[in-house]
Image (cartoon, rainbow over all chains, first blue to last red; front, side):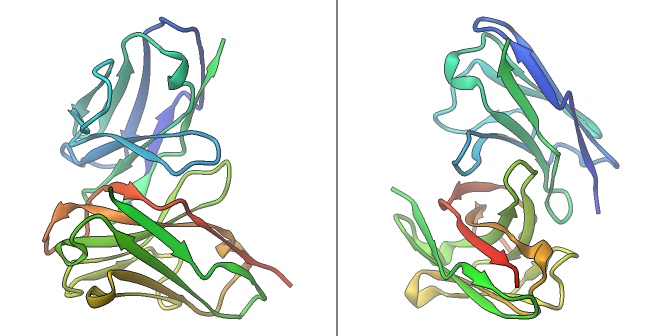
Length: 106
Length: 124
């Protein structure tokens, strides 16, 4: 099983900040990585796939990069609606998720 | 509008069985693979099982292999999860999700639509 490790576990930031979340895979997954946003009491929402392709309808302030074992999700200018938990997920093998990064108000 | 609606959850004793159903609408069901993903509140999601559009390729997470069975009925636009020999660690919200790829022979993908989830509690 491919292990996914996210950092940090919790990130405190303010509206307007630029924030970056990192996701590391235990082995190379090429670019087979997706990012999700989850708000309390809701299902995860797909943000990005193939490491850097924005899902339709997702604001362009979200961007993704990386390949192999290291990936990042960047929000260029935080908006109030962005405070949530973010998960990465690999799909190079049987799907596995990172443990999550909780983005909270500073 | 794509909709996935789960049912069949509830409280069951350890060792018991439960069958989850997911009725879908808003897309051509037999064009897409489908999955079950579960999540304990406050924890990361865990992929449970996946099935291709034609049921030719099926996969399971290690923690449920041999106990859970995923199936689908394309005529009814429905996905199922038969859960046997349930354990306390199976307690979670279970989400029905759509595979992101059209008519693929693999289930190794990401999930573009999710249901609202249904609670399964395994406890005596």
